[in-house]
Picture 1 (cartoon, rainbow, N blue to C red):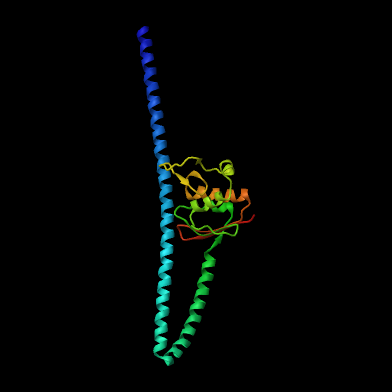
Picture 2 (cartoon, rainbow, N blue to C red):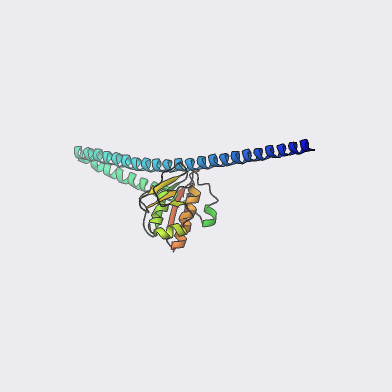
Length: 232
């Protein structure tokens, strides 16, 4: 009888050990998943930064090319007045044609843009999306990224209200960690980054709470352009 009891006790101990091992394994798997998600969010933020720099460089290149073409045309006009007159007439016609084309293109673009409400916007896949335009209370943020727009809204709030009203995680000390915390000088808090969808939800939610007007124009990874507009 005692031998049987000892065996039962031994089996119970082994079962307890197995359960503890399983619990530890589940915890480690969950931690690894969370870390992967946060690193992916940080990577998305860096991609947004690169896209902003790329857009700025493209604009500068376009301005340089435009300036070069303008100088070339002026030199040709100085060489031959008669040809300049002919060219001017031709240029006017081309300019009108180009203007008409631009108008057609603008109309075409406007047709692609789809206005969307709060319920519909979160049904969209915002992965690798980028913000083309944003206006908060008639002011544009300096950088068109989800994180920077959220920080612009938080800057309008007191630290007490940020900690009370925001659904994001904050720490009052300076933190730079693998799980997404970054120190933000503007609000004197460390904020834990989230993905585009969760950040956009917080942007819209805080604008509603603070009665800020909000206009957003977003290009999805599919090149579809959507607009969201709220009022105070």
